[in-house]
Image 1 (cartoon, rainbow, N blue to C red):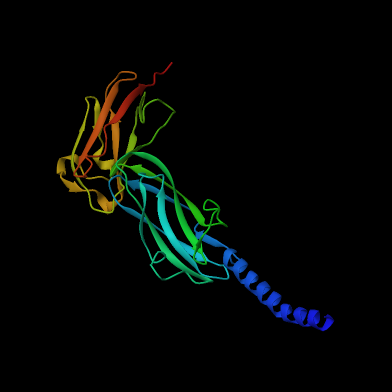
Image 2: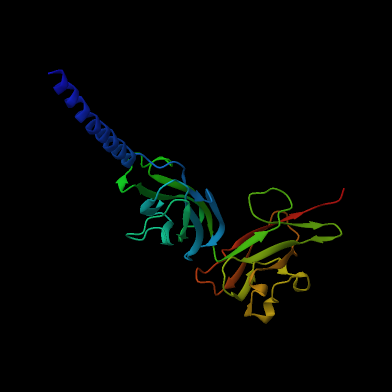
Length: 270
């Protein structure tokens, strides 16, 4: 009887070892490989971008783990926002991202609404063919990067402000002459813009000799350098705080820039 018990014990040892081996394999299949999955850069600011134009920003997905991952989704958030997944080599069926390798992702930005825009790039992935449960954690199954941009008109005004005021430009008339106001016309788009006309209210005028934009009498003419130029505006009246306006017309698709409000201010001697 004792010999039989010994024999049974000897036979069970390999079986226990095999069971332990199988258990370790199953556990390994469920665990994430060591290391991390990251997006570079962690954030991207596109700066000023013209409305209704597609702008692209590149990212790199890095798999610095000890095993492959499979990208299951790439999305720009919030849903329906100005950011969207444009193109990548990360989400190819049957081709996981191997350990210690990377792939490119491009995000698109386009909007018809002026002003700042914030968003998020989110990349979801699987490890070992099993979907991770903590999909909102960078160490679980998703990584994110923050996005920001400021949507502007195709052509914008930048007026020099000599004192803080509720309007964008003050023109000063002193006892011995005038102090002018430089209005910078900026082409925010990648294409050439033609200035088709310049108009302004009474008692305001353009000093052509001091301006770098085309003389209003020579229009239409292209905006110089595809970047920016300036008109120097002068007030010729005698009143204090006389309201006025300046309008530069272009062939920009969105009809920009908008009208610029002006105001005079007269200084008197004692």
